[in-house]
Amino acid sequence: MAEGKKPEVLVLGGTGFVGRNFVKYLVDNDFASFIRVADKTMPAIAYFDEDAKTAFAGKDGVTVEFKQADLAREEHVNRAFADHSFNFVFNLCGETRFGCGEEEYRMKTLDPAKLAAAKAAQTGAKWIEMSSGQVYKADKSAATEESKISPWTVQAKYRYEAENAVRAVDGLESVILRPATIYGPGDLTGLMPRMACAVVYKELGQKMQFLWTGELRINTVHIRDVVRAMWAAREFENGSVWNLADSNDTTQGKINDLLGKVFGIETGFQGTLQSKAATKIALSSVAELVNNKHVPTFQTVAQKHEIANSPISPFLDKELLKDNHLSIDGSKITKDKGFTYECPEVTEELFVQEIRSAIDNKLF
Image (cartoon, rainbow, N blue to C red; front, top):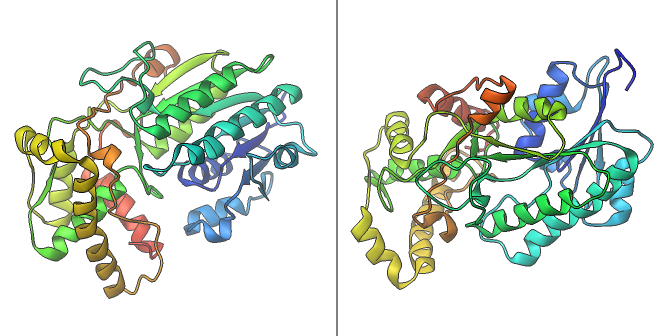
């Protein structure tokens, strides 16, 4: 890349939660001259807020282009790379919902990584892969980048397979990022489902109690820090792996405390013995029971506020009801690269910002 020339960037799967925030970050800071977003989902139906719409419109000196593409198909991958020599490719492709079938994860996560990484190697672009902290063995002790790999969701299984597919491509420079639970404006599958559950219990006037105890780790990282780390990763060593997690050591207890304050509800937990008894018979039955309570009530509240269509839901897949800790050590990037987390802990203010963003977008 010529000195003084801003890079050209390709963002795969870029209309989702992370992608739209990343594009905004690049545009706001004039980091790229040309940004192409390739995704199967068009911006018009992706529930963009005004900030995302503005970012995708680009500005003087920063062109943003969207190409609709099914990146599990080779001809669509070729279309995504056409007519430009990209310096960096950021791969955000993948099914972000939990509880989907293996074939769906393979088609939406693994296949695009294989095809697009091979194309990136041909063009000389550097690849930054967004994986998941759920690839590590679920343990109360914080996982470092060297910890045992044992994915505990099907989604994470295919995220790790995508990592390996990228690493296997000859001649491709790549960096892997493994975030904890990502939250912030635009979040749908991180902390937002628990916020939606709080709406349900506010409506019912009941105490909200989750399974297990307040000690269960659900470590976090704010989207603001994720997009900053993504851009920083373009300069990281080939083949390196980096965890992304704030220093809050977020637990169910900390999340419930914030939900209680923000929504004015009483919160608690079922406890280990009661949770074991409830899940011993069939975790799927427990999930069905709670979702049959949560989802219709949330929809009733949405109707009261004249919200006709929203991707936000209190639905919790059975994979997320297990007593699996998501405990991630995100300090290596700070020690080795001088990266600073701007949101080192989950606060009431950040909770309200996420909720307010959804309300302003008429989704909550």
